[in-house]
Amino acid sequence: MNFDYDLFVIGAGSGGVRASRIASGFGAKVAVAEEYRVGGTCVIRGCVPKKLLVYASHFGEDMETAEGYGWTIGERRFSWKKLIAAKDAEIDRLNGLYLNTLDGAGVEIINGRATVEDTNTVRVGDKTYTAKKILVAVGGWPALPDVPGIEHAITSNEALHLDDLPKRIVIVGGGYIAVEFAGIFNGMGSDVIQLYRSEQILRGFDDDLRSRLAAEMAKKGIDVRTGTNVTAIEKTETGVSLTLTDGSRLEADAVMYATGRGANTKGLGLEAVGVDLAPNGAVKVDAYGKSTIDSIFAVGDVTDRVQLTPVAIKEGHAFALTEFGGIETSPEHDAIPSAVFSQPPIGTVGLSEAQAREKFADIEIYESDFRPMKHTLGGSDERAYTKLIVDKATDKVVGAHMIGIDAAEIIQGIGIAVKAELTKSQFDATVAVHPSTAEEFVLMRNARS
Ligand code: NDP
Image (cartoon, helix red, strand yellow):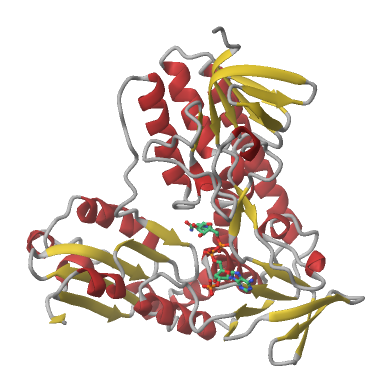
């Protein structure tokens, strides 16, 4: 049977773009449909604009640090509008680069929302296209709980485009996005209250990182309230009024929800053609990204395995290698390093202490809690913390964690060592880079069990 395309990709985000480009490189005829802007969540409304805002929000503290180093800083003023315009220009530039990449790779871009009509047919507007293989790479979208008045809440999507910086903002949630935006708004000078329904923020992370981040956020003036949730939201003249689980009320200019992200499969037509979805709407796939239908595949956030851009890219690449390059490749999902761009940031790879205790009979913990050198003259009381978790039987480092300046930069290198299953002795045999924070990872010698 003749198809219009060898591969039709739905969604031009990180995973879809990588899969398109690599498949096309193997000679496949590829089209990618995008309903919004090429680049996807990470580039357009996620990692990239978020990180630019994190940089922006840190300058207030940097200027205080500078004074400790002899600088006199004059009058300070911050323009949210200027920042948002600069950020938008950068996102436009990156969007252009993505468009060029696809164009250069010979991938046809189709603007519009695609839906699946049958196992080999996709519809965009009033046109249908046939394809030997369909890749669903539509990503995710903020998931909002069913709270009365939730329509008055914003999500990270809107937070990146607010007309003005809110003077008082309430952030609901205790995951990556909530702590990152709490830090952003606090650094910009907003009064931030973060409400988290459970006992400690960043569930799933190592407990020492969780408690330390909560303490550092509190020191910086963020009011982190755990065991608290919102039961109703009302619009007021100046913003919102929230009713909390303890019956108290809270007034703010804005309330932002960061309560997880759900797969974007609604109305896509997948179930009708026999693709199995998980109860939360995620596409169920095998180790190669194949759904329950042989010609339909999925990668990235829509599969709800690990919601991280580099993972989506690896999954997209592996799919293209397997299906179009003849190289059977299944993306690995172990020892994935990740960073939370909180303030201070977190870097983590491998198992948390709690996970390691479940998996291994005997573990050793190496940790170091210290004041980063930059803060000695800078005057900040922010601390840093590094931690290694070792399986005693094999001496392998099974988890590495850090909170403190440059954690994201540092954990990438440590991630190689953990992925390579290096031992604590090999860490110890590595010469330190001095003076640095990273050197703690090769200098910790006293174990606790
Ligand atoms: P997360 O899944 O990380 O966190 C969701 C948070 O919302 C949890 O604290 C959860 O609480 C809470 N929550 C869930 N439902 C409700 C509810 N009904 N009422 C109140 N609170 C609720 O999601 P995020 O939205 O923060 O981020 C989505 C994903 O995006 C992340 O998992 C991550 O993979 C990715 N991401 C990665 C980043 C990075 O790499 N730096 C940055 C941003 C996002 P509880 O713990 O009790 O379940």
